[in-house]
Structures are given as C-alpha cells and as structure tokens.
Length: 341
View 1 (spheres, rainbow, N blue to C red):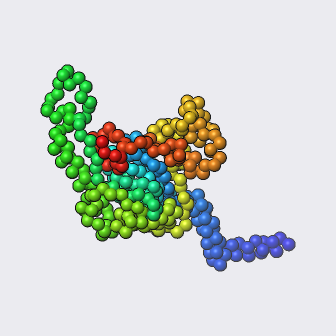
View 2 (cartoon, one colour; view 1 turned 90 degrees about the vertical axis):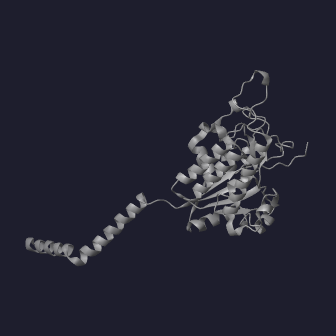
C-alpha cells in the first residue's frame, strides 16, 4: 500500500511539473493577475464634461467663476472633451478676452464645443471663438462684433478744484480722439480674432463683420459665424467624436465644481428673490438659498447650477432691466440695444 501511494505521488508530481500542465496554468494565472490589475489600476470610462453658463454678463467676478469651471474640466483626467452651453450678451473687454484665451487653452488639451443658447453676443461671442466647433439654435442671437466705449474719465470729477494731477489726461485717460483711436484698436483686435478663428468658414467681409449686427442662428450658420444648428446633446456627440471616444460618461461640471468648492465659492452665489441668504440652510437647499417647493420641479442640473455673478434672471419674475443698460466701464465688448438719448 505504501509503495502504491508513493507511486501516485510521483506521478502527480510529474504531471504538475510537466510543460503541458505548467504552461496553461501560467497563462490562466497571468490572465487573472492582469484582470485584477486592470480593475484596480486602469482609468475609468472616458467622459464628456458639460459646463452650463446661463445668461451672464461677463465681468471680473463672473469670469473668475467661469474660469474655475474651465480649470476643473482641464484638470480632470477622465474628461476627454468639453461642451460649453453658453448664453451671454457680452461684458468687459478684458474679461471677455480673458475667457476667450482661457477657452482656447482648454481646447489645446481637449476638444471644446460651444452650444449657443439664447443670446451669444459681443464679448460672449468672443469667448465662443475659443472652441473647436459651435452650434446654435435657429432662434439664437449671435454676433454683435464690435466695441462700446464710454469716455469721460477714470474717476468722477468730484471737487476738481482740490485735485492735483500729474498729467493733463490723468483724470480722463486721454482726449476724445485718443478714446476713439483706442476703441478702434479694440474693435480691430476683436474682428481679427473672429477672422482668424473662423478662417475659411467665414463667409462675410471684415467690413460686414464690423457692422455690429446680431444674426439669428440659421443666418449665423449661413454666414460662417457658427458651424451648425444643434442643442447640447448634439454638442456632446460632436465633442466625443472630436476626442475619438465611442463609449463615455457625461460629467456635469457645474455640479462637480459646486461639490468641490461648496459654500467657499461665494462668488458663484446669488440669493434668490424673496429669500434671506443668512437664514438659508445649504444642506436643505443644495446651494439655492431659500428654495422650497420649486426644488421638486427642478432637474439635478438646475439644482447644482451655480448662479454666476452678474447673471440676469431667466424667469418672468426676473425680467431684463430697462434699456439702455448703463455700464460704468470705459471699454466694453457689449451689446447695446437701448434708445438714443
């Protein structure tokens, strides 16, 4: 019996150490180890990030908040492409150009598709030039390339008899002729940005471009100011195509930025009408102070959308201000739709 057991053990050892057994076993073990490594170490499914910018006047604060969203989309390695759903009538020249440059730098790393909702005019249109591709709704208002300049001094002329200046133009920033020339330079820079970014797609002359006209979305496409007619979903599909990804998740960048910065991002918070911001409970309102019954009808995207500083309300209870809009900045890319004085 002992000899029999010894012989069985020898046979088993020969089988286990033979090439016919060891090779398949090594392959199976390698597959198991590879699967474990892939599961724990491999990156997740690629994503398309969506940034929603509601009707917003572009100035220093709103540009800072928008910049936070652009930075998040850039730094998140899982986000392979970005869609910016934009609505803006424009704003300060420097802030608008800053967002254009910021968007262009993002597109150097990841494809950026702009979806123009409502009005994307003047400085808002300049920001849109930073994307790879653009969509608009048929009824969107697009364009208004140009500058509104308000001359008359960098500080109010209060008690001029007791103010001492170091130069004849210290209070005013220059003569009227100087302001006209400065505005012309800003206008030319804006036009050249559009011409450079649109390239062969642009089907209008520089002279026509600088008329400052607004165009409906369909006409803007025909003129080459916009690439196509579409909504945010079309933008997501185009962004994924440009990034070369077939299966992907969608990341709500607004919600992600809100979750990351929370109530520290005070620049992105605007109290709602009829509410007391000091009494608001952030845990109950998800960032919308004083929101109660209206929250139930909101989508998750609406609940987490940061109301950008300078944004005008989109509901009937928050109508647009009376026109003309008075802007206290000397140089602006802005759409002016008021009446003459």
